[in-house]
Length: 445
Image (cartoon, rainbow, N blue to C red; front, side, top):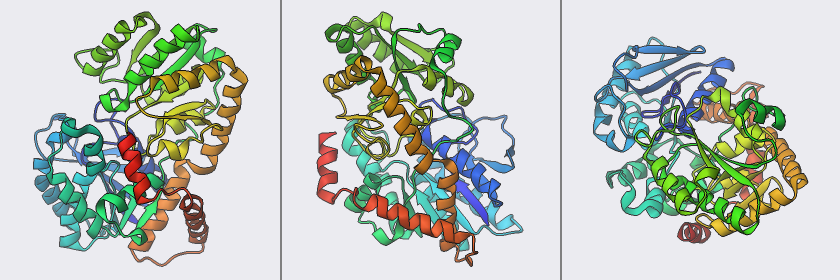
């Protein structure tokens, strides 16, 4: 097949960890590479956000097309909607000029979907959409801090109605689509995110700590990802203070991420806020801001930690928990969205309510007091993600969706993907929350 992946603000070439550079960038990059390895022609369309970028870049055989839409500078994604008509016009023109037509478009995020709707109307190319985050759910949790205009809701409603297939990343995502958008369950497929087995694996903890300069005997907690308020890192800071004061555990928190390689309060304002909270809790010396790190370095950080913690207010999926499990580390995560799908409470780690430092401190203490428990959870997580969350498996499931919407004849090799898709439905059917449960979960968060 010839496949167009559209990701207007999240380039697969960007360094993850910045304000608008995270899971979606990683998703698009790995899906594109895996599909290319499977023999498909893959193009990724993303907005040109630097003046010196070439029109087309090569990424391991995948073409990355930098779309001229708006000024060629980095901008918050909340400010990009006015440039989507320009993005759509370019997309239509590019597709028309291609000698071989695209068999399917896969839009990532609602603004990419908006542009793809114009292509579908003009050229009839089937459309698959992954939202990565839903505007109505985001507004429930962020309220006035949500910088997107209300126009997002109508755009998403249209995409839910007019896309050939909607990809939900977890059962909660599917429930939210039905609850808030009235989606047709027959046109929603659950396909999770994944991890790269070449990137992440078991790491010797002592060697990793020696390489990073971490003390060997200290209980080390890792938080890794985008540094924005909704990620709930303040909950981790407060939990660490309770862990040290109440459980008398010599614990240290390492925070990896930000908009610069060196921790910079100007480039990453969230660092200033979190430092203020740490100082107020009396643990400023026990919280280290590492700064942004490249993908090749993350395995060492996961491997050096005793436990990985992620406690966002809400999370459409969350890639970092499965990366930590791929490194055989236990995960304590907020009981929200995709995290409650990937982390098995009591087996691969613990689930805690968001914004609850007391519950988080209690679970951290359990692992600190029982290192063998942490090791067992890490091994269980390792087995789980290899069975269900590799990028190779994600790409196979997406490939099956693409072939169906493109109405292409199936080959004998597609049978395995069909069986796997049905097995996935069976695995997730019993955990899909009802609409009322989804409402209650949103209210608790």
